[in-house]
Image 1 (cartoon, helix red, strand yellow):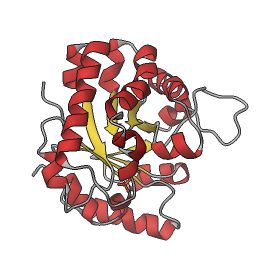
Image 2 (cartoon, rainbow, N blue to C red):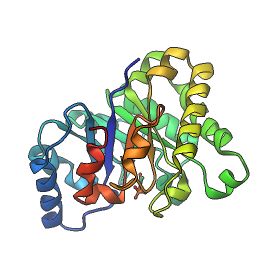
Image 3 (cartoon, rainbow, N blue to C red):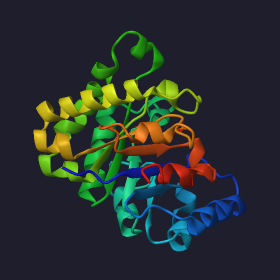
Length: 250
Ligand code: PEP
């Protein structure tokens, strides 16, 4: 089954000013972008409305997080229903920075994934191992453990709205990208897991994207791998080279 190439830009808590945000959006609005790639940018919540209005229509907008309830006394949180009502189609869940800094468990990520899907959002679901876990040969086991609660919370039909982002923690923001072999092997392992845990159809149709120090210099080789269906890009999504990464399949 053909899987549309997907490139996401995770702006994290950037840029720091509205002026810089405008400049970033202008670069994307002026760029020549491969129409066969699905492009999604994830700015901080504060900028979502402004960017939704100013970004070209062939680039979609994502939130970087949401809570697992529609409304209520949850100070500082954003609900999936609010995002859907604001016409934000995607949300990133399970990013390693939230798992590590905010102690989000895989069970909590699964609850939020369920709530996001129930509100009609699509989810960019992040998983990945630490350096210690990779060195201990536990990469596949860790990815499976992070996916299992999600598999339990979802029905087979829900998977058409999930993009799995494999992001080794040791590669995020470090300049240390996974080798093509490491990326391909892990993506193939994730697909094998999905095949047995969900179904062969879900395994072959779910997009598995790679994240972790993707740049214009390394994207081409990674994009040619059979089980890499795109990228989640952090630091480089704030630079003009993001356009080269979007166009890496050209
Ligand atoms: C990310 O935060 O999702 C990410 C992949 O970051 P970077 O590209 O900067 O490593």
